[in-house]
Image 1 (cartoon, rainbow, N blue to C red):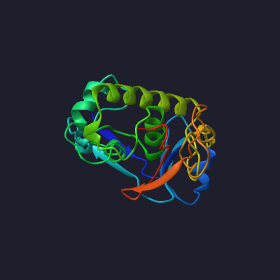
Image 2: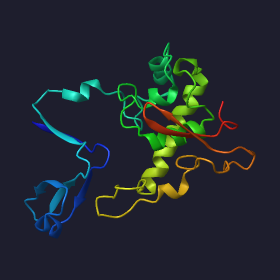
Image 3: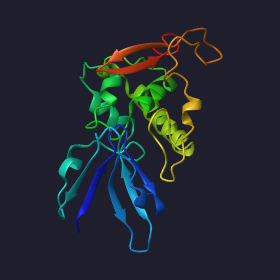
Amino acid sequence: GERLLMHLGMSGSFIVGGARAKQNPKHDHVIFEMSGGGAVIYNDPRRFGFMELLAPGEEGRLAELGPEPLSNRFNGLALAAALEGRKSPVKTALLDQRIVAGLGNIYVCEALYAAHILPHRPAGSLTETECEALVQQIKAVLARAIAAGGSSLKDFVGTQGTLGYFQHSFFVYDRGGQDCLSPDCSGVVERLKQSGRSTFFCPRCQK
């Protein structure tokens, strides 16, 4: 049958609840009323998200996406093949949804730190071993973030309206000018701009 493709953009979220739908707070743009009562509300203060109804068999924007990062399709060999020959920084490449779908700025910074890879290295310079290590760290960072309910810095809340707390576990993100948290490192976390996004890294731990 038909499928509804939904993207949260920068600040979108879904809230599950019945009473909320009747209040119609600001930025509630779509309300799905359930046949059994209650509702699922799409809230998006910055309006960067979208919804697209796909006909049976239609791929739409899904056809442009790379593998989902927690799937078996996303592995070291697949990442190495996708990055081969690329001169753009690896941080920028990982935010390209055609290479891997769904990775955001926070989690790319944290995964590159965990894999000891500098964010401004040319993507094509990574070895297969480094790509495998990076994939494993991406999966590990995402698993920890999901277990913590996500990262609530400004807008993000869970489906029950609760805040995530992974932001309390950041090693580098939003820690520019602070000491590296690795016990074997005396470096300081640095911040730079890449493609308009803030990147955080440790120049001593990452190579």
